[in-house]
Amino acid sequence: MSDVEVIRAAALAGTAHGFLGRRGGVSDGVHAGLNVGTGSADDAAAIAENRLRATGAVAPGARLSTVYQVHGADAVTIIQPFDEPMRPRADAMVTDQPGIALGILTADCAPVLLADTAAGVVGAAHAGWKGAIGGVTDTTILAMETLGADRSRIVAAIGPCIARTSYEVDDGFARRFEEADPQNERFFSPGRAGHHLFDLEAYVAHRLGLAGITRVEMLGLDTYADADRFFSFRRATHRKEPDYGRQISIIALG
Image 1: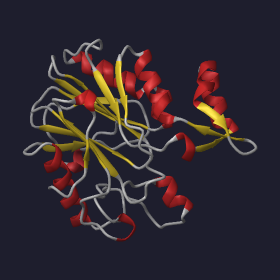
Image 2: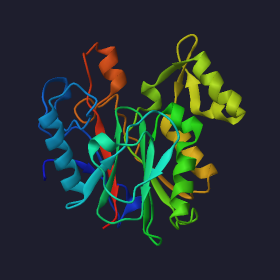
Image 3: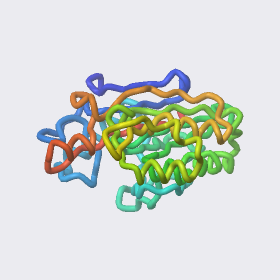
Image 4: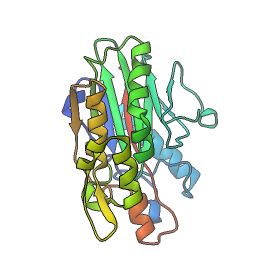
């Protein structure tokens, strides 16, 4: 698994975790690298091998669990591993069970990994703009608390996602955030006429802070700008590519 690039956060030191990109996989073409997206048009055998490599690189011996992500705010508690066809529809997972690797798939959205090591509880959230404004990190924290976590101890890290300089949105998008909270204006900077640049990573960090998470690490890695390292839905769309890969972020208890 040495060729699989595993990006780790200092905030989560001591917890098995990793933010992965496209390096170290067996897929080719537009999916070249470590594509783990079962919803992509990639070869199923390649996806399965990539998932094995990803899990082995982060949490050897653990069994990977992923959800059917719908850009919402629901969080589910995983008490035992489940097979891929049984995936619940949700955008976050929590567990207090060793041997379960929680995996979040992204291709520009923000992956968020969380841990309370004292309680032995971890969580993982998929925070696209819809989930972020809808409160997916809030529901993840609440689900962790039901397992005995304390938000004063929870630490979080936000992995590779589309950066402000790459994320152009229109007036209506910005207005939605500003209507939710006028202070959200700070997450937008001027773009071309009728458009703005949105800082998804900073907004997700802000929501975590509002929820009482005092240690939040932002990795500051732009999925759109680094084609050799990360998959990006928006970049694939702009290039008019027929499909795109998904990367994975994983956290597990030892």
